[in-house]
Length: 284
Image (cartoon, rainbow, N blue to C red):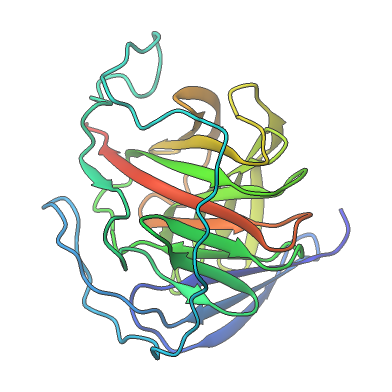
């Protein structure tokens, strides 16, 4: 692997001053972390979720470009009825027609926002629009105001990818934590129908499941997929459109919240629209 620079800019819901931190990768890669202020309003969450204090808004002059609604390949909708699961499915026991928490993005500021030359993560007509401006292996993710009280969970979100090629990808981060929310597990679906699971820890990135093709992932461009992640202790499961893709094992991150991002490998300005975030808690 060539030496590359990987940037994770975590868009905090909590107001934090801007800063820069660097750490050396085990293989020579360098991870730089930036923290940006975001504008937020605190929504009302169910009892299982903890709502943090309000954040200081960014200046109103922050540019937010107008939104163009994409016409994606038709993909699956959020689970409408409880589906029959195959024996051994780790979701057994969950009512997939009734999530413990839902966010349809009809309300703004439930996720962090940023508009800059590097990336644009903004609310756009009832969805989160994530744009990675440069194909440079840099990643910017927006975290939600949700703070999980338990790390055993199943989460789904719809990701619609625009013009793309190869390993341009949509990303879902789970169990996000660390001093600057720069740690967690990140599931990615690529334009060419592959998935990958990585672990971010302050100062390092480790691939748990390298790029693996799956017929369950609808290929782009203009494709819509339902991304799913289930964590039960150290067992980490990846899902696409309701189908199990594979399992990884890791026990470093056991609790945290969630993040969304686009990751441009080939296409500068890669755009992903996120919608219909659903969350289930795994019962003991």
